[in-house]
Image (cartoon, rainbow, N blue to C red; front, side):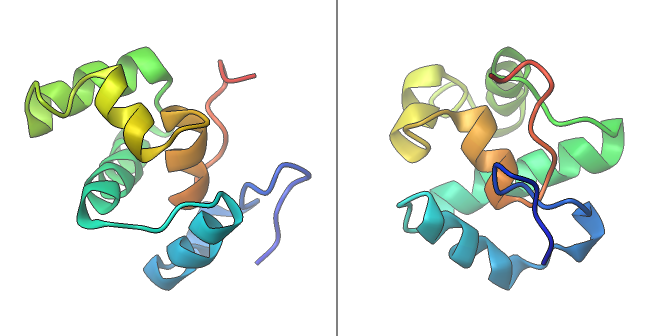
Length: 101
């Protein structure tokens, strides 16, 4: 799998679910079902809108789809402590969100 200098896959079509655990390990994350909910959500979002969700969009959209208890920054940061938008999209094999530093 070919990645850019930050570890994001260059081709989203190269991603397969077994890769997620490998990418997550480089982020010091052990995947749980809660992680997978977010990972699958960001992949679906990308496939529908052709862009990775920034954090504000991610929080709002997850709240609408998965419920208010999961649609908040605090919950998402417990899963992806460096940054939910950055880490979830990287693990999901997506481009880095445009507004992420």
